[in-house]
Amino acid sequence: MTPTALRNGPPRRAVLVGGIGVRSAFGAGLDALTDGVLAGRAAFAPVQRFRTTAHRADRAATGPGSPRLADQLVAVLAEAGALSGPAGSEQPCTEEELLLALHGDRRAGPVAAEVAERTGLRPRVYTGACVAASTAVADAAALIASGRRERVLVAAGYLVEPDTFAVFDAGRALAGDGAVRPFSLGRKGMLLGDAAVAVVLESAPALRRRGGRALARIAGWARTGDAFHVCRPHPDGTGLARAVHDALARAGAGPDAVGYVNANGAGSKLGDLAEAAALRAVFPSGTPPVSSTKSVHGHALEASALLELAVTVGTLRAGSLPVNAGWQAPDPDCPLDLVLDRPRPASPALALTVNAAFGGANTALLVAPA
Image (spheres, rainbow, N blue to C red):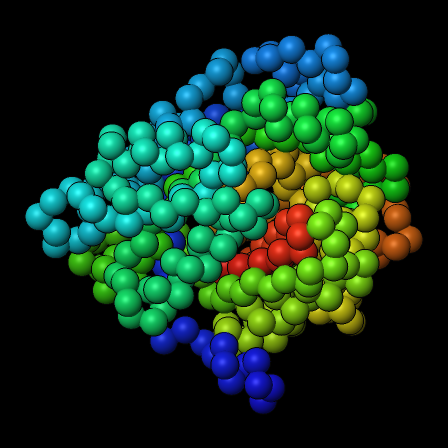
């Protein structure tokens, strides 16, 4: 057994997903998100909530109108059951900790403060770029697995707004053709998307006490950094591959147990190449089925990992793997078993969802059916 496996053995206590609340471009709820993703129906449309005439790109996956992020976060926390308080408590949720992933700008503090005031929760804010939410999930899972907590609330939110849109457009990161094409020849980049998500993670005894039913189990988790470049990923995907290996070691599972990968796949030329290299390193005899659901719901920045965890739970429950939308032609440097054309029926023992961020940060979460 490797030193990593010894250090990161299977969790002492199961980490269960006891509730999920979602707002996305597909509407309210996990069912709406799952149905939209499995339909392979990209939610990208011309942005209406601010002017894009000065930009190269004009599309994103947004919900109607101009919602307030604090309102959306309170709604998904309620939908997930996060505001009812842990089983056996006399108070609804006063002073319970919330791990909250938000975009790291001037709005994060006021949003967190409003959520705290309206819910009684104590937010601890994560702003670690596109792995912020999965880092929060890893922290929450570690607290439950070790017995330090019975229940941990995780939430994340990002709504497409003009400042970030302008920054990514100026950096030529947004797809000018209006489509996200992960791992495809001719991919042009990413597109942004709305997301507000809340997940309740619980121990099995806590879930039993309140009479709840698990939606899924977080079987393994890991995070790594490769510190290769401030923006570009390591071309060999070494940091991401190490994160997947560590998550598998923590779950006490081998690569052959993974039956689906919800890839980071943002549609960038260098990012997709690095991720494909990482997956080939983890699965040398051939990857399991792979798709990036960013191809339909867009990139929600700090909230993306929690949205994709919700997608992964939803597709496991549906017994169907979502398509890698937007695909045009094979890229010989991305030889993956992509789910194309239509959803693929499957009941994997483990699904892997991975995320990567600027600065070389990588996370991997392993999800098992309940």
